[in-house]
Length: 241
Image (cartoon, rainbow, N blue to C red):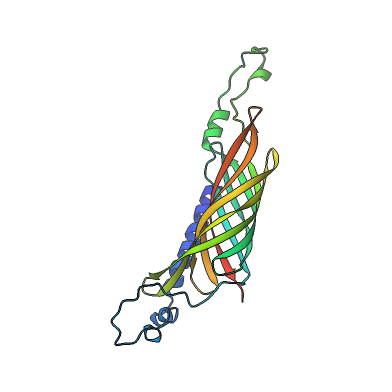
């Protein structure tokens, strides 16, 4: 099984876990996740509720630990699968900080394999010598690891009814910070920006999907270039306390 298939299998496993977690919750349990209407609105009050209820649990000052797996999207000649761990904490309900450590598995893409199968004699040198046969191998600077330190802002909040079995709270958040990126050309200092969405299946357990862009300088064709490395990952987190 190649790396892409392993990543897809991990995603399907996570999705099935969410589905069965929803299926095994009773209606009573689903109701217990939300505030009973009578506790905030009188029975004879016909006025509509104009604001969304706050969730009944809080995440402020609760340490978070999690894991993730994902891939780098905008690579032409390599396929990079990343996996790692994260630690974080929200200082309030809408702002926090987190750290991530990721390692990667890098393999040649189909395009690079096809290029390496091409053989030719260079215009310069001894064209009759077999040692001068080369292939048009592209200039690649593979990524082998990332260490992120980022601020998190989560001003957007909502909730979903999942199969009438459970209430799923959700945050949409933004991230910004710094990253150390390990590449073939050595360690690079990168600026990180991103966005993501978190789904709270329980008051302590959540699943996440994140998109992040790490911007750094690298050398290609003996010239310095600005590189944007786009990555997406899915993962799960646990909030303590």
